Image (cartoon, rainbow over all chains, first blue to last red; front, side, top):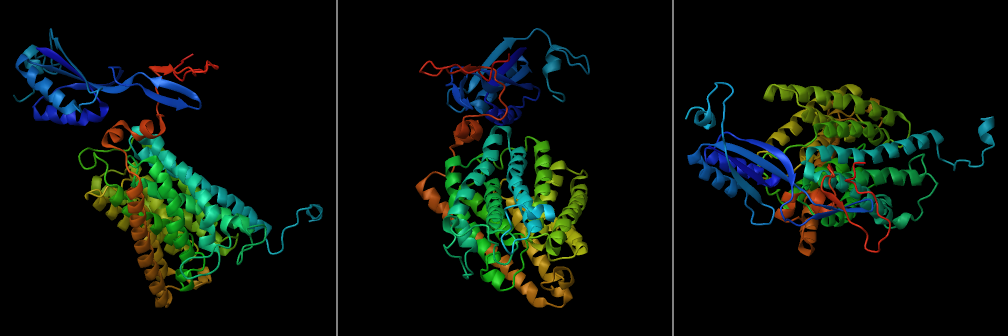
Amino acid sequence: MKLVIGIVRPERSNQVLESLYRAEVRGFSISRVQGHGGELDRVETYRGTTVKMGLSEKVRFEVAVSDDFVDTTVEALCEGARTGEVGDGKIFVLPLERAVRIRTGDTDHGAVTPVGK
Amino acid sequence: MSVLAGLPAAAVAGVDTGDTAWMLVATALVLMMTPALGLFYAGLVRSKNTLNTFMMCVAAIAVATVTWAAVGYSIAFDGDGSIVGGFGNAFLSGVDFAPREGTTIPELVFFAFQATFCIITVALISGAVVERMRFGSFLVFAGLWSVLVYAVLAHWAFGGGWLQAGGTLDFAGGVPVEMGSGFSALAAALVVGARKDYGRQALLPHNAVYVLLGAGLLWFGWFGFNGGSGFSTGDPSVLAFTNTLLCPACTLVVWFALDLFRGRKVTAIGAATAIVVGCVAITPAGGYVSPGWAMLLGALAALPSYAVIVWRTRTGVDETLDVLAAHGTAGLFGILFIGFFAEVAWNGASDGLLYGNAAQLGDQALAALAAPVYAFFATYVLLRAIGAVMPLRASDREEAQGMDVVQHGEEAYVTGEGAILVVPEDGGPVGVPVADPG
C-alpha cells in the first residue's frame, strides 16, 4: 500500500481528475495548497507597493492505493497535470502503514479497493 | 419664493428646476449601474478573472466618457440627419446651460445623462468576451464601438434619425442599449472565439452573492435609467418609473416557475438574471404601456430569454455571460410589445395594434430588424479589423493562469502569504508589504 501525493496546477486539476477516472482510480482527496517549486515569481503592484509573489496556488491530490495500482496512478497524475512548463508540480509516493474504511471496518487492501471490485 | 428670489443663479429661461433636479439624480443613478454591472459580471466568472471582468466595466466608464464628449454625443444628437448626426457638438461645443431642444433641462445635464447610457452599453458587451480578451484590445474596441455603433444607433432611436422620424417608439434604449449590446455581444463572441475550456469543463460562477447584489444595484439604478428617459418629472417618467418596479417583479415570478419546472429548484443566479431581463424588457416600453400591460410584458419576456439561455449553452458559441439572451432578446421583445400594447390614454403619443393602430407594430418591427442587423455586422467588421492589427485574446497559457494576474498584475483574493516586498532601487522609503500581518 502506498500513498501517492500529486501537487499540480489548479488549472490542470480537471484533467487530472479525468485521467484518474480513466485509470479507474476512484478514491482520493484534494486540497488547495500554496507552494514554490522553482517557477518565476509573479510581480504584483498594489497602490505603489510592489511585491513578488513567491508562492503559487496548487492543488494537492492524495491517493491511497494498493501496490499494483501505484504505477497507474502516477502515470495518470503525470498525464493529467503535464503542460511542459516549469511549475507543473511533483508526485511523491510514500509507504502507507494502515488504512481503514470507516463504514465497514475493512482494513488495508480492502479499504483502498473501490467498492464493487 | 421670497427666499429664493435673492439667489444670484437664476435659471436660464426654459429650464425647469424640478425636472433638472431629478435628471441630475437620474444621471448619477445610471452611472452607478456600470460598477453594479461589474459586480454582477465579476460574480459570474471564475475567481482568477474577477478583477479583469470588473475592470472592463470600469474601462467603459473611462473610454466611453471621453469618446462621448469628443464626438459620440454630437453624432447621436446634433441635427436630425437620417443616418448620423453632425459634428456641431463635437468636443462639447455649444453644450451649456441652455435647455436641450424639446426638454426643460440644461443640455449639459442631457449630455451627461446620455453619456451614462453609452458607458453601460459598452460595458454590457464585455460580458461576451470576459476571461480571454486582452484588456488593451478591449480598450480599443470600446472606444471605436462607442462611436461607430452606439452613437449611430442612439441617433436612429433618440436623436431624430430615421427610426425615430419614422415613428418607432423607444422610451429608454431598447434599440441602442439593449439590442445594440446584445447583438454586438453575439458578434464579439464569434470573432474573439470561445474560452479554451468552454464545452470541456464546467466554468462556474465563483460568487453568487456578487451576482445578486449586482443585479439589485442594477435594478436600483434602472429607476434612473427608465425614470429619467422622460427628461422631466412628468407623466411619462412617472409611468416608466413605476413600470420599472412592476415589470421585473413579474419576470422574477415567471422565472421562478420556469426554474421549478425545469430543475425543481428556484436558483439565485436565475433570479439575478430575471431581474435584468425584466428591467431590459421594460426599458423600451416604460413610458408607453399601462402598468397592467407592463406586468404582462414582464411575465412574457421571461420566456424567450430563458429559452435563448438554455439554447445558447448547448451551442459552441461562448457568449459567456448571455448578453444576447438578457439584453438582445428581452430588448427586442420589449420593442415589439410596444407595437401591440401602446396606449394613447397612457402615453399621449401613439396606440398599438390592440388599440387599433397596426402601423405602430410595423414601425416597431422595423426597429427590431434594423438594430440587430446593424449592431451585429458593424461589430463583426470592427472586431475583425482590430484583430488584424492586434491580438484580441490572451494565449492559452495566460488564460489558464487567469486574466487578473496576466493583464493587471493583481489578484482579487490575495492571501499575502509568500509575498515579498520589492524594495525600490533608489533605496527610497520602504512601504508595508501587503503580506505583513502586523
